Length: 178
Image (cartoon, rainbow, N blue to C red):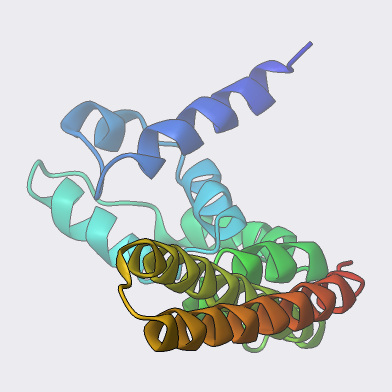
């Protein structure tokens, strides 16, 4: 069962995740500490407060910067972990490291972000090889000379060897997951 506070935070997080800033009603009813906590927990920069200040200022609402910052400080601590570094890296999100600079978990976050990015790059290479293999298979089907077919088969063998090495490499990389 969700506690009312947790449910409110979840709803606020889902609401804010889908838009650039806040609606008028959100500006008027915002719990700025919770907004900061949600932003920090997602790895948003503190500069997000400037967006709220600009958008909410249009309707005469001034965000409580102190409450936002306190919430953000707590949220960013939740975000800057080894597990989140890994998750961000595997997803190819290298830009999140800057938000953790100066935070207690930065070293661990950065180490696992880098390890996750290695997995991401390996997955990209495997995907490119698969696409090239598919392209060559089609080319092989339409090849007309024996020499052309031999050349395409050699290329396919090279890709297969590379795929084997990449899959082994990825297996080793994934052992580094937190």
